[in-house]
Length: 341
Image 1 (cartoon, rainbow, N blue to C red):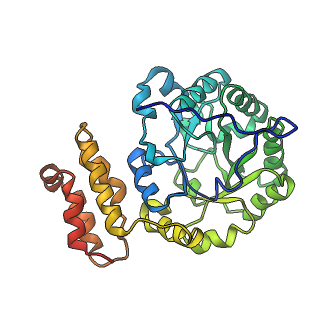
Image 2 (image 1 turned 30 degrees about the horizontal axis):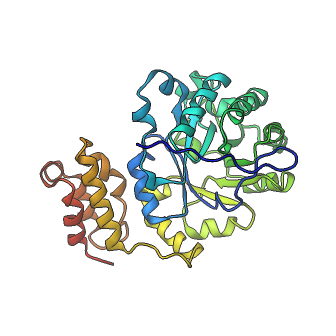
């Protein structure tokens, strides 16, 4: 791909980089084994103004792995943010530099993942116990890139639900000049709960997340956690600068299109037929370079959930015989069976 570079954002008189207050209104969360580049391309067709995030990519993967495999993406995905996992300032600095060179619009540091694998690497949610180290990491990245450096974090660790913990964590990063915080409004329980449990068991505390906006009024606060529908998002967007949806667009992708229609009525969105045709053409371009069709269509399985014949759509796009025989045209064939809305 052709590398692109983003010019340095404007800075305030205090030296803090300005961020677009509208740039994070609707976000799709970084999710491992979910938000790959094919998923992001699909979501962009549904919601042109949404900000999409990569799966978490560790600094080790970029230091020792295949950089192109991890960082390549379609220009149509932009604005797209690169989420990094790591806890060593110099390694994060090098990874952030790569992200900017590959054309990403934002570098996001993961301070929210509670999985044991991530904890063993001393990053993710456990970093919230070391705010000064996180500040050093953020500062190292800010010093080397011109694009925004943001942080995704939880409200607390284990069962300590004191507001002071997250207020002080955010305050420490605020002092580095960080101005965008994506707040998963639950604690992360590091021992005894699975990552799935951590998305459901710790109580949601939207009021504590909203208090951060009150205490840091010129920072952008994006709410994550428990948001499923347009109604959920519209209720909370009154208190926050943006919302971030997680699993909902995977299970019901059309929620993104519904929100795009409601929030930006002045935009001319692609018709359903045009989306299908774009997906088929994209799938063809990917299979031409050796990407298995099953990988490309996996994010599409829930597209027509709730519609008649949605099971037929899912079955056709999951059928190994059809996937092997039909190539990208399978998307068109399945849509003909489901029928237009």
